[in-house]
Picture 1 (spheres, helix red, strand yellow):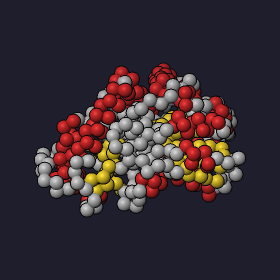
Picture 2 (cartoon, protein in one colour):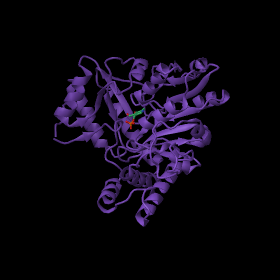
Picture 3 (cartoon, protein in one colour):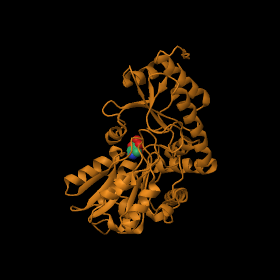
Picture 4 (cartoon, rainbow, N blue to C red):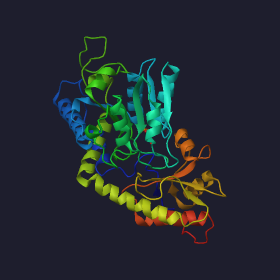
Amino acid sequence: MRKVYLDNGSTSYPKAPGVGEAMSDFIIHVGCNVGRGGYETAYQMGEVIYETRQQLCELFHFPEPKNVVFTPSVTYSLNYVIRGFLKPGDHVIMSSMEHNAVARPVKAMEAAGCAVSIAPCTPEGQIIPEELEKCFRENTKLVVTTHASNVCGTILDVETVSRICHERNVPYVIDSAQSAGIIPIDFTKLGLAALCVTGHKGLLGPQGIGAMLLTDEMAQAMDPVILGGTGSASHLLTMPDFMPDKFEAGTLNLPGIVGLHAALKYLKETGIEKIRELENARVDQFIGGVTKIPGVRVIGLPTSEGRVPVVSLDFQGIDNADVSFLLDSDYGIMTRCALHCAPLAHQTLGTFPEGTVRFAFGHTTTEEEVEYAVRAISDIMGDGSAASRE
Ligand SMILES: Cc1ncc(COP(=O)(O)O)c(C=O)c1O
């Protein structure tokens, strides 16, 4: 049976050309650690790491490579920021569209003596400025939101959130898991305090590598959550206070960084505008097709406008989990069902606790693959138009 991968919201596939080759070349042919080896290969690898920090700076319009900290993923970045910055007695705001990568560390801080507000969003997953404004208190120290929903794809109006935060002088942190590499992000224009990034979704890199981009103020205010060797200031029994070492304890994921380096090179050469154009075309084709099928409800916005290439469907008269199972077992179409680690978002969208079936497209998803998926759904829903099982 053929295979059609429509789970790019979980992780992108295929990865950018050159990623696998660069990683395997590093593992097979390069022996070194960085900051721990006094030899030429280690210095060369140090340059690749620096270049990767620079690539992230360029992509996100961020001025300071030393403040680009490598982490294992956006989940780690968010934990480092939320748990390293907040202190008991502080108040933090998140939106009602958050993934558990934000919601769980924020709620854990509540247990540790912080106060938490959840700014309600619309049933399409958009921020409501007046509601957000109402959440602020005297002791509000941080606002953290996702940039785009991993459930329905809605792009949050981060410009407005940022303006509201700036008016109150409160740092704003973005979870870019679903937006990085898919829509432009300008750290400087948005005036962010921190941007949390994962390498394996829209950036088309490997799993196990992410980053956080921090302003100097944020880097100073945060305590490191993970402590250990940095290959620098080794006479101290405390973490160095300079960047990025303050937050990079332990050996970095060098194969991951090499892979991310190759992916970022590809993204630059291809251009994210081009990628977005291709993905939007697939989203509109898919939504256009499934809305004609009785018993299928599209969650969130009606077209590709204002969304990343993630579409959630709710099926009437058949269990969503059964649809997802049949798509895989009978048609080889890979989707993700249930709550997508985002119970708050599903509550906001009115799809809790059943969840939805999520279809997430990539720029290499073809028109024919989308047509096949629409026919498969139509077939499962008994719409009369049989999908060919190839
Ligand atoms: C919005 C959002 N935030 C955070 C994450 C966590 O990403 P990772 O598993 O790469 O840390 C995801 C992954 O699905 C996500 O969609």
